[in-house]
Each structure stands twice: as structure tokens, then as C-alpha cells.
Image (cartoon, rainbow, N blue to C red; front, side, top):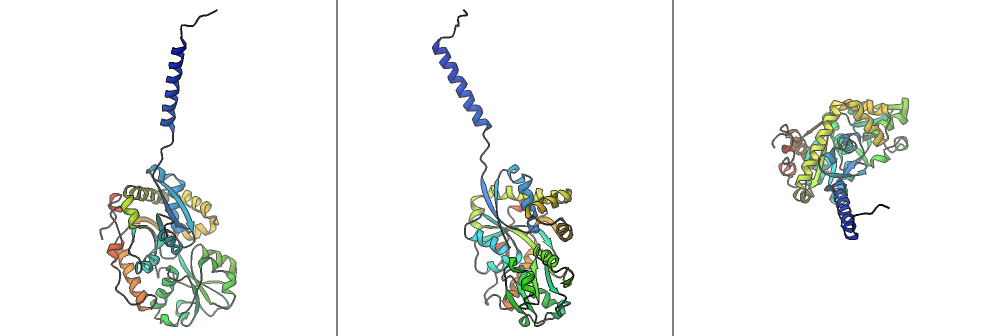
Length: 333
């Protein structure tokens, strides 16, 4: 029989030491709790950098835990943020312009993509419309207070058409369908992707795409409430760093980037290939957006979309403090 030199007290002390060591190791191995933010993200390929940053783990690598709260359209994205349902939001410059008249408590902190062909004017072979010059008196469905409405007015003005002659029907983007276009209630739809592609697929040979590529540039931007910017400056910088990584990834590996977006948004690969060349993914916040917002605001007042009032100071709406910490390419405003 082998005798042990360990006393009960020694055994107890050893067990306590082992328990303490196990607890210490557990604490060290426990996943670090990262600060959390949420983004109201519009379900469109324009939001690709946000989706890719999440899929590739860039947000967490930069030290912030981001929850994506998906909606349809930049208006709903903005509304979710404004109501406290999200910390950040993605939207077009048109949404920013409209809401800047009634809310000074938010800022644009980055623009991450632009396109001169994301919004389409689609009609059918049975319609008399064949070019933007035919829009006088036309019945066109638009999504109010969005890039859909501004785009239509912009294209009409470029072709010398009095926008007061447009007969617009207010419609949500998901209701821009084949049934609506064939109902005789409208002659054309002004809608963004992927709804444009889906409608053209539904129409088949009857689809007519009015020539508007290059006439209007749309940007997608990251918005935040000013209170969020004040409370989470480090997390905002981390978020922008992750989006910058995602933009670099898109340039470096477009095939993988397209695959991520196709899977995330459940889109056809043919659509992704069709629309992708129109997108320029790059973080910035410069004079072009400032000029675009001011021009859109002047149109909104002259067209009657906004009641006459002083124009917002868009230099105060665009906040490049955070972006300038990431890239020197972000122009001073």
C-alpha cells in the first residue's frame, strides 16, 4: 500500500488553486464583449460595403459589433434611425435632402458608392413612351421623397419638360410591379434596383427601358444621429474603417464580393453581372455631394415638393471629422 504525503489541508489548497486557475483561464478565453451599434440597411446592392463588412468580419476586426437591421428603401432606413430603432442608416442623397428640411439632428458621415444608372424609367411596348422627351403628361409611379421622385424630375427638366405636367402616382418600391404597369393606371415606373431588373424580367420582350444612363448620379451614404456621434466616436471610426476595408475588398476580389451580395439579397447572378459595372464603391465626403444636395434642395422648392423656406446649410449636415481619420482622400468641406 502506497502512502500519500498529502494532508487533507494540502489537497484542499491544491483544489482551490486549480479552481482559481480554471476560472482565470476561463476569463481569458471568454470572448471580448465589443461595443455594439446597429445599422438600418436598405436591401439593395448599393449597400454592398455594409453587407461585405459584416460577412467578412471587418466590423468585429475593427472592434465594433454591428447588427444589421434590413429594410426596403432609404426612406425606411432613415425612419428607423430617426425613431431610435437603429444607430446608423444607409440612404440616398435625395432622402438626406428631403429630411434636412425638417430635422437638423442627423449628419452624413460618409458616402460609399455612386451610380449613374441605378434608377430606371421602365415602360412597355404598348406604351407611347420611347424617350424622356415623351414624358409630358405621362403617368409615372414614383416613391415620394426619395431618389425615385427626384430622378424623374431631373430627367424631365434635362429634356425641357415642365415637371408640373407630370402625373405622378405615389407608390412604395415593392409595389412597382408588372400588375401596376399593366393596370393602365400608370405608363411608366421610376424605380431603383433590384426592382428595375425584376420588372424587366417579368415583362420579357414587352419591356422598354427609357435611355437615362448617365443623366443622373445617385450616391448611397451612411447617416447617424448627432447624439450617436457624440456618444460613440471611436465606434463610428471603427465602422468607417470596416467599410473602407469592404470597398477595397470589392476592388480586389469582385467575384467574391458579387457572390456575397447575391447570397445576402437572394438575387440572380445575371442581375448582379448586369448592374455591377454601374457602381463605383469608394468612401468619400466631398464637394460633389455638397453641390448635389444643394441642387436637389433648390429643385424641391421650385417644384413645390417642399414649402418655401431657407435652404439647409449642407456644410453642417456633412460631417467628415471621422472619415478624415481614415483616409486623406476625404476632401475637406
